[in-house]
Picture 1 (tube, one colour):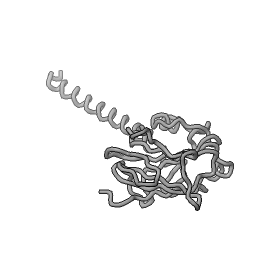
Picture 2 (cartoon, one colour; picture 1 turned 135 degrees about the vertical axis):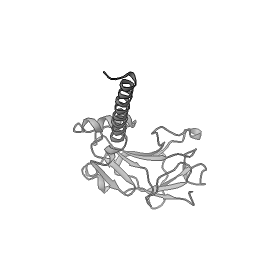
Picture 3 (cartoon, rainbow, N blue to C red; picture 1 turned 30 degrees about the horizontal axis):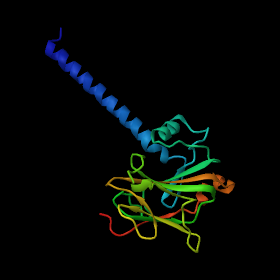
Length: 201
């Protein structure tokens, strides 16, 4: 008959194995729901990428769960298209402490917006509730281009999205009622450029 110490050792080993299995299961589920959905069924245009199944009735359960977990209330592509940027045009991760210039031409949609989020997908605590630039607030230059900057301090004469703190930055481009050609060919987006302004340690 096993001794008490042997039974306790066996129980401890079993608990460690169960704990490791639980950690592996939770960790893999987190990775799938937080990261993996943007690796499949996506289109990449410049620094921006879109999940083509967002809002689609054909989306699988993992995609739907991931979109819900990441705070994206997705509509069908005919109503809204979503492009996400977590890197600049040079491939460097976006950081809230850094200053970026985002510029381009208005997308082919009835209305559009670019919103700055922290890496938890919540809005920054921005002065004067300056969270986004959109088709109504964008000032176009003589060539029909808009521009905005992000960072801790504004740039005179350019629309500013404050991104206080030091954390990851996520830019979301939404196209409301995109034209049929854009719906059919998301890669035809004239992607806004994202360039770092000055050094960003």
